[in-house]
Length: 600
Image: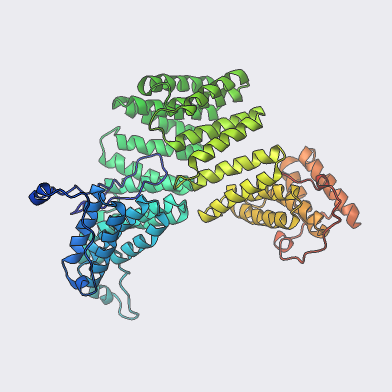
């Protein structure tokens, strides 16, 4: 574990969060104790059950450590029920240690960590959350009080946590918060996960200082979590801090620095700074070449090709992809998913340059690999490739084949812990395809499932969530579910106004849809107010001759004619416009939806 060395082996941890980069928090399983002579002489088929511990026995000061050791032994041996028996030992140990009170806090936290790790190993991540919260509460004391009027003397009366408890307490608190963050991440709760990682980083910096190399590892770990949550500004700050610390403490061109640069390139690419991303990738590649890491060099070459593709430097992108393909085929074989991923990148490049035959050929090559991948291939890697190929087939107009590929990807990931956000993305893409082929009920169901997953994972404040609500609203319109569509458009408007601003194209699209649904509900005045705002913004940004502006003018003219009014050039406040309005009577049911001009 970075930063702090445990006096005893750390407990087995939960499965790592769904990130491709390595975790800075390796947790080693405790060594199995050597069997005694008597146990070799009299082998047993199963471990003895936990001793019957009544309330009086729990007061024995030696019982808690004994049960904790039994829990570890049961986990390592795997005999006689393994995890279930180990969990019972750990829970009994926690009860006994809790009875001891002061002086047993570290062992109590350790037993709770073991119990939480067993819950996670059994796939019961939600059950591990309260156990870990209890563990960190045991070793994370509240800040000392500062009585009013006592001035600086109050600090002298309260010993500092580091002086009072030392490094072992810091280790227990740090590992507890990080394990809690990992568990939240496995449930897709990225906001809670990031909050826990942040608390762990604060404890580590308080114990080691903010320039320790082990702090850099945790900074990079937290930066990866921010990338997953699409919080690129926060990720960039943490990654720069990690890079600065590694450059200060490590040898020139170290592997740690190369890892930081690869993450920084990913962040800058997401923010649209392709030149900056390319610079970091080239430096990382040079470091890997100097250290003889050929496969890592090939992986970086793929990323360099992606950056060249974003910069429309297609010949250089092809060269980078082909160079990586040669190395990966030689090192891993023709049927490895990493080889298929390069095929997918080449297929995307040739599709963008209009060479459709070559694009489809590379898609077929990738699909042959994904049909029978090499042993040990990660399901999320295969599913990611299938999603990319589905997007290419969608662009080529083969919607049925794209839908089949997405269904395959969904089947690979639907039962995987920590993949809720990815599954929601697949379901959203399927919803779009169902909508395009006219299967509106299936489209709405797919969108509804994706929205529910994003709500549960705490991603209700992203622009993607707002766009998804808008798409679900469009599917409801096609099913004549007017009230539900209105609620979805209103929620999408609130999200996109917060995340993108009132004048962003996505927000304006939701405004147009909201105006159309208000028109369908008979709220003509509200629809006119919205369309006047949309038309004003589009005229300012696009000019009066733009086709979108012309469409909005025609829609507004029809509504104004119906209301017996002329266009009001003086805009009303959007704050007043989107206030609570009494719902008016719906318009006649026979009116055609196409007249309302909904926008996807």
